[in-house]
Image 1: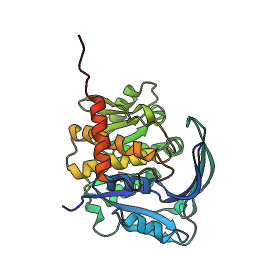
Image 2: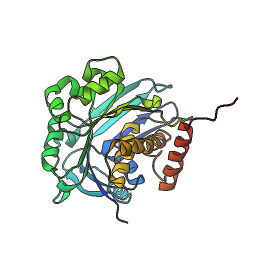
Image 3: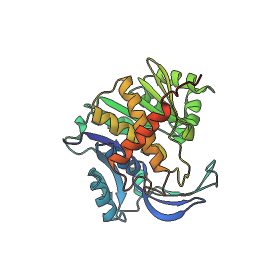
Length: 308
């Protein structure tokens, strides 16, 4: 059975990551990389739109293609690939950005290859809101559009961000971003307020404490899969999104029941991501591994028998 395509527009990068458990430089990263590994693991065919420099390693492009993913939308330009360096505290409660070198990503202008505009499922990773809006214009066939953002755009491009949020079906934010966007302390109230601005669904991520789905039918919490030995949280959010959107692309339904089922897959994918440095936590995993962790999470959610 052919894999359903899933369009992702985001970044490919090289990361230098340092944690109490491990440290390495030049790791393949970026939102599109983490997302694509998880989405492919969930059974979808990621179509990647990103830009890289002439220093981007051919073996890394081949690695993405082998997931499988379609890399026809990866543009190679003269210059340096986006690079980021970060160091985490021992308890992962804080992260220090050591450097950010945008390189060719600074002038990223997403261009969709011919035929990609009819992809049913689209994920707009964390890029400038104006670019996200341009991708929406170029993909009129999308039936489910999800959007991620960050504090920088909330602070510096609020008008453009509000405009693009109003056009999407699913808004994905973390707890800090939800509070900042909505101006409310309660995450439930914040999610409801953000839904009122246009999206059918608002997902509020709470890290190791799980996620809140705010939907037309109500609010549905889901705990995170418990991970005992966290190594690197860098790609957890994008891997979560990849598992979510990959599941939805495969199921082909976008109602609240489908989104709730997809959240379990997303939690499983995100839990794999934090168990290794960079992409290592997801690399080498098989669909059977994802299915097993998904089932383990479902068992944790089952109500226990009450003793008398």
